[in-house]
Length: 101
Image 1 (cartoon, rainbow, N blue to C red):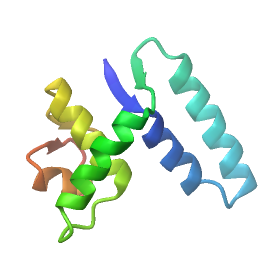
Image 2 (image 1 turned 45 degrees about the vertical axis):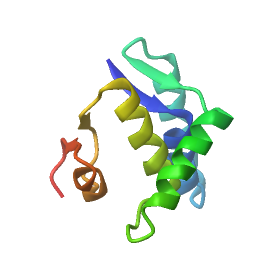
Image 3 (image 1 turned 90 degrees about the vertical axis):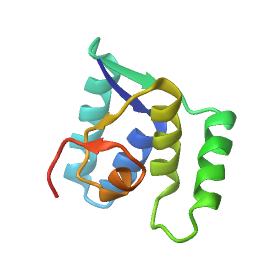
């Protein structure tokens, strides 16, 4: 099962927002993710925001986004180690990115 968060989907949609065609494709992709039985989307909560904010505050020397911090906290909480990214920030926190950078 793939696990993601509302925050990750929000970040993806924001990245695609400037181009109308890309924006439509992004909406369709997110809808497919939301409809997939193979993907669990963890809802955004005030608690997830605060947990991510705490890690964000604790790593002023890193370039982590708040979304990264929220994801890292969730992964630690759920005992997840593999992450579908090439973002080296996750490696810095002890996770295993599955894509090469």
